[in-house]
Length: 70
Figure 1 (spheres, rainbow, N blue to C red):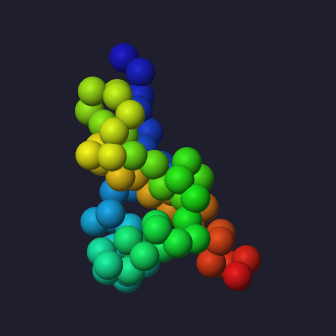
Figure 2: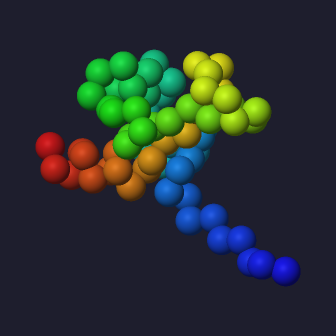
C-alpha cells in the first residue's frame, strides 16, 4: 500500500487562519484583491466540475512568500 504524505502546501481556510491569524473577512479581501486564483488559492468541487461553490484551498507557502517579498 502506498504511503500518503500530506505536506500542507494546500490548506483550507480554517488552517490558513490558524497559521496566519487572518480572519475570514481578511482572507476574502486578499482573495478578491491581490491573490491570484490558481497560484495563491483555487476552488475544487467534490464532483471535479468547475464551480464557485467548491472548497477553496489556499497555497500557504505561496502566500507566505508573497508577504516575505512585499
